[in-house]
Length: 273
Length: 284
Image (cartoon, rainbow over all chains, first blue to last red; front, side):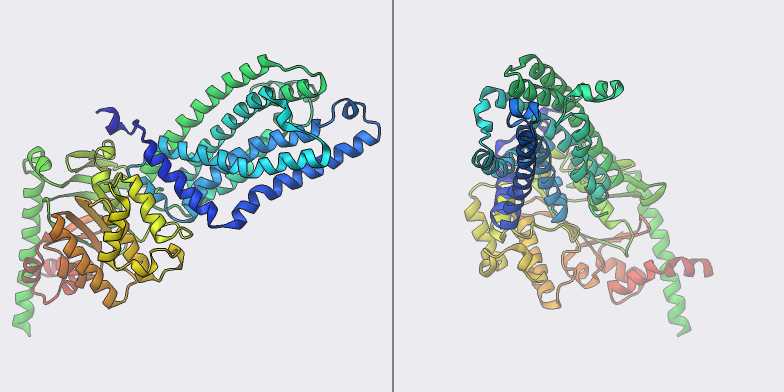
């Protein structure tokens, strides 16, 4: 069996076809576009005003490090919205009963995943760019001023979000729409454990082990080091990247196994509940 | 009356004996040679779901350029069989070979040469017909996408709703669009699962005519799962009747009618579905 037979070959043309399909969908539906911007804006405003209030009450940390809450909420949104962007594009295929068409076409799983990753970035950009500008307008917090550090944070967060998105897609293939709620809620498990709004030391010692095994924890610790101590912790980013490589490989492996299992169970044919 | 009933019983016994002979001859034939010359070769195919057989040891081969009807009631195993031929479902045991590629392991060797239409899948509703066809044409690496869509639009009469969202079409229009999607890549193997379900007789007849035309023009191998006997009678040169996951009979429509002593395939189907053949044999 050669590479082409095994499904390991890669066609940019097929990836482009899928991206075009999702782009057409976004373009045809303004509520879908509005949804990308609405919730990140609400979150940013709420945490921004809360930070303002705490700082006005004399919160020492918040006087020293303006933007630590807004920074956290914006980075959390990269993680959360990145996964959601990936999973919603996948769910669109299930909602429209188009998955069978795709699975019986020459589209390879790796091309499908690549298209979902591209769409996750597109959706993230549509949602997050206006919100970062609003954060600057309302609270004077400029996320873009973090420069290279922001790039390192972004790469690590988006890799984690894709890994989780890939795993959830596998669950959806295997279990149908019964697993839909996982797509919306799985990332919230990361919210307390990756210490988005507080340092890892706040956690009980046994949960600290769990926290340090999750790549986003390093990013949020790195963000606090940058905003509070004005130090960029490259070491944290390297460890996060290493964990992300492992997580991504594990998620891809799980996806392929779940797809294989879906073929055995016949669940690709019936993608309902 | 008694004489006619007796004659029918004799014919049914002959049918059952013929069936047994057919099964023996099919399973003991030169498998590898037949597989390599068949467009589709299904050999002792079994699919179990939680221990229940959806498909139970079926064997058949389709010659290139042939059109075959897969008949059976609900739960007979038609859709599962087609899904295994497409590589969408992994068989529990047995083999499926399409254009020489073993499914599902070697599916990427042949998926671009196949296509299908099924009521179990739909095209994205918010995309226009043109956008949908264009995306799938790109997935199937169709050359001259615009030209191909224009040709299909003319052939299947899609012109007036080509730029309308797929979700806003009538059932008949949706079927025509699904058929256009199935023909985009000029498939050598065309699998159709209930292609005219929920269509009015006029539209259904029109769709059958287009299918016949495509098959003649391209020399494609067509496997058509249906429980519409008129459709099968009109289109198919061979009929495989399935019941409870097994092949109950397999022959040309003419020979089936003659063997069962019936006027229409619907009567033959009812004989098989209601187990009249077995009842007659037991009575004998």
